[in-house]
Image (cartoon, helix red, strand yellow):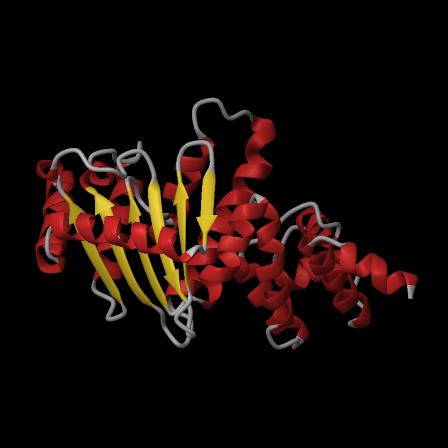
Length: 274
């Protein structure tokens, strides 16, 4: 019984690491053999098993295929990635994973649309040191891993409003910025996604310094999550959700239409290339 209680207290990353080690030992493989047969570095695999590192979800897909374990490792990875986020954001992400309708406004490029290189640059910052590399890579893996939400079945209905500011702060490397613009353009054409740009000419608005996300579940219940530079706030109180929905409606009214927004994105891409 004691072992079960201890397991319940384990972090998601520890459970994933223990499962990785169990599958490897069950297959009769050493870390060296696993490294040789999968192409992943031995020390990297050790750190995954020790719960010291969060991989990209594609690594778990590869290892699920290697062990013939279905989607067991991917399932544990989805729980483990929550360890990279603060408690209140973890609850938001749990709700995000089951939402049927998602509306969001962001002053910058939202994490759900970021390429890996753009996310890495955004998370690194000028103050980053070599000791921060593992933290950055973990955050990148967790952020990119969230993007499966847009394509899961059934696909959620997603509306994204991006401030023009997001398109006027390019990445440092031209290739990174071009790839990011192409990613936004591609997602804007997905049938389950509506993307709009809030232009500068709309003037001052009430969400200039933070993001807003509204989520609705299958049963019709909704939550609102607001996030600024230093804190986030999740509310499921009905009046609060309604107030945030009305504020979102006002932003949508000020935004370019979806077709004009797509033209805007392509114009920015052409400006960048010229």
